Image (tube, rainbow, N blue to C red):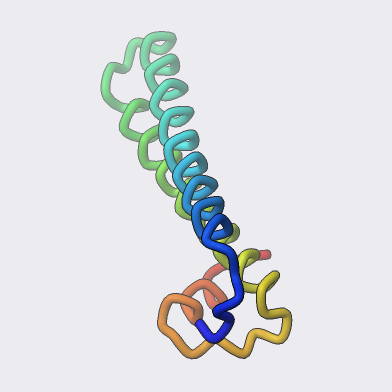
Length: 94
């Protein structure tokens, strides 16, 4: 990162946003899959599907959040040389 003037609270805010998005989407997927399993009487099927869909949604939201955070800091995207930022720019739909 070339921008050293950022406040440490920005990094803490980003981490808390990512954590809440990942945990929330996984929990929603688990509970909705469990509810569907109880309703349809198919015990582990929808629980596993809900877990996987929740995890995928959480990772997708995490990538969008990180992409938005770096784009907000550097509007011209001059720091796209690292692998992670190239990955975010390639696979994130914004």
